[in-house]
Image (cartoon, rainbow, N blue to C red; front, side):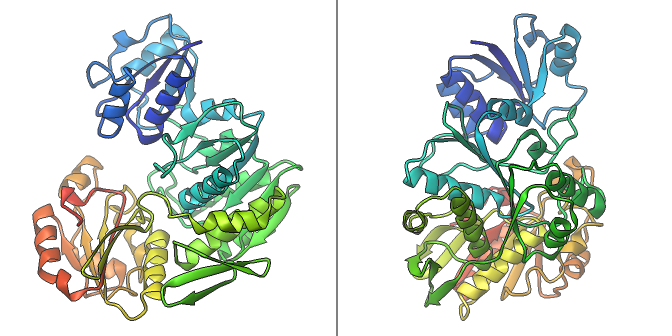
Length: 444
């Protein structure tokens, strides 16, 4: 067994990787400048929580066999510098996991939106059908203790992100995997900080598609015009499987899908999820799984954490939490809610939290994204602007960027709480969208 040190061990995936390696018997250590719950308690319970937060070069000794580098760590990190000076091998976490999965039949789920839900849906189907598999996913899922599994299973299901691998490794994370099936759910410009132009963002997906080998299968959403153009223009040696939303019917709020002439009621809704389901069905057909068993498995899928997650139903008022933060995700979530609750009044609260969403040049990408909502509140924290070194945002500019003069803008958690409290009784459905924590206010 090896001595492995993880720089940025507190990350959502990194701490799960640390736990998985610890369970395999490796001697695991790590560091981070801040470690939040649930990572703190989980690392502590395993006995691998760093004694103190911060970066300390003294932690790096010649006895360490490997350093795994998280994206949060910068090039000037003293532990990274010491590792390189000592000649200790340094790998980004996707590079390391990709190496572990190299002999498995890999199903890689990528795209600007829907990849966590599609990955978790595929994992749910495999689990229900008792198919052994390893996985790497970006959210905590019901029925799975960790976000990373490493074993001798023949399959690996991976949420393959387009973001950069580490400060030393500028390749997209999905480039470290060799897919048997590569799913791409859709493309919409994101990660403005590392892909400053639309072309630079599109290029990483084009490269992914063009480097698939002759034994691979490309499963992509042809309803996405940008993705469809890239897929059809690319010189492919992989087998193409374009898809669109699966057949469905809706009675009241109950959505059912059709598979081989049989109907299966679902616990999730929205056109984007019907597209995600068809991606999963296509993968299962390629693998020649029993499609009736697949349909029954999908009936019990509740969705990934914070992906249109029902928080409460109090006196008929529904509250949802959704991870939507990029423009395409906010629009898809809004459209799904309006189609599902076509006569109810809906309030959407969106937090601008990511580097892209707090960038003036990027904000106009949200144009019309919330127009299906009866009322919308935009929340951002001035401290987030300072931390990300972004210029101040004017409420009127935000309204203009969203193309909606009726939007309410809040810049403190107290004003957000007061605004919600003042108007919440007017609405049947309230949804919180974003990747932040809404200033720590109670969502229910």
